[in-house]
Structures are given as C-alpha cells and as structure tokens.
Image (tube, rainbow, N blue to C red; front, side, top):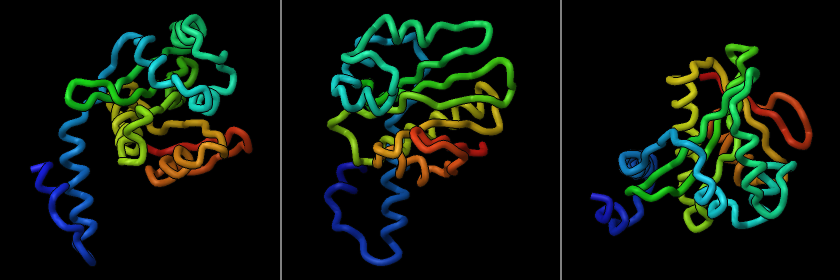
Length: 180
C-alpha cells in the first residue's frame, strides 16, 4: 500500500488533504515511540552535527559529551527524565526526552527532539512531537507540556507551532506550551 501511494499521481484540489491524511496514517503505523534507558551511541549519532547539538542544548559541551548527557538524565528528588526513541521498521530514527518536575504535578517539558539528518523534512518531526505529547498524556500524566526552542531553529519552531504549541514567553530561547 505504501508503494502505491508513492507511485500514484499527486492529487489535485480537495483530495490533497485526504492523500496527506492517508500518508500520515501509513507512516504512523510504521512508527513506534519507545521509552528506553539512555542510548548514548544513538544520541551521539543523531547529534553528530555540532550545530544540531548547539540548537538543542545551548549548554551542551561540544562535541557530544557522554558524561554531560548521563548527568542530565539522572533522576533526582526534583525531577525525572524519560528518554524516548522513535523507531521505524526496527531502526531508531529520532529521539525526544520528557522532563517531569516532581514539585509541580502539571510541570513537564519536552526536550531534545531530533530526527536523523537524512530523514528530515518528511513529517517525522511532527509525528515525534505528537507521539511524545501522547506519551506525556498517558504516562506522566500532565494536562500541559512545555518546550523551549531557539528562534534560530526555524524548522523546529515551525513544527511546534503546527503541532498546536503556543508561545508563552522568552526571547532566546522562546518557551511554548500545549494543552493536552
């Protein structure tokens, strides 16, 4: 069925939205978001581009520093971090993290959303965002989720706005939230 969609002619008019809906349903059926222990090799691969790492984490040591990531993901009395991996056909193609602050039952942040460089621009970032929000809703639970994004990161900025996030405050980075 997927090969048929790629081979068919691009629909015209109102059928385009139906075409895109079917395409995303098929993509979603192939994607899985899985909570796992921190996979440093995978993160190092996804953040092999220093610019991606700088945009994702302004305080990150460059190049990728394993000890810094281990420290960030350590659970403490104040917070718990979840490491989530987006898999397509058994291969990891993306990552996100959720930071849950224990002091506020409704305070959750999405962090470190990244898609493999070769797969960007194909809708996987939006799907990772949606699946991560679903994870927060079902597992934290939280009624809203926040994230921070650098205004320099135009693709991420656009993805979050198109995923239902709204600007809250800040200039660099800007803080957004979404009601779940």
